[in-house]
Figure 1 (cartoon, rainbow, N blue to C red):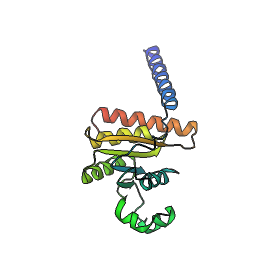
Figure 2 (cartoon, helix red, strand yellow):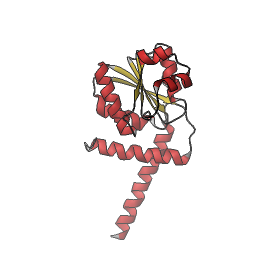
Figure 3 (cartoon, helix red, strand yellow):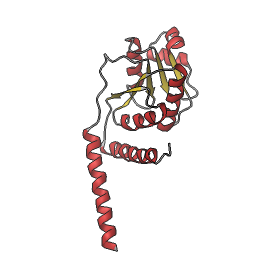
Figure 4 (tube, helix red, strand yellow):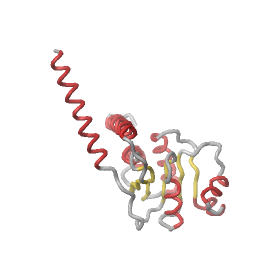
Length: 181
């Protein structure tokens, strides 16, 4: 019985390692800048994400931008000044989502925003190590009728960060497959 457990543990460890290697080797790059969508959703939490979304909006690659996971204390004018975006652009075209506290919440916030605006195409901007899990959460909530363009922002990567994100990705994928969205 112990030999079976040891073999099972070894197979599980080998499967995790093989999946981790796939995860690292298949980290995506930013989506091409020439792709146009109706909306852009940026998930907060990493450098370069919001700037990427704002740059795409300025380049008229979408009609609106949702910044998901914004701290409740952040005011639009503060962010407008920090990003050097005119206040009228914030008023017309940038929404601050303040409900999401994690990636699952980002998916829910994004789905509500997409539904509210009746969008059929959305670009999802987040860090390259985070894009697979964020995309899985978003797809589980926005439905098949919406084209989702993952846009990975290059990030500082470490083995620890990648292993943690891969483990979170596996866990959430398992829960989503089991219908525990």
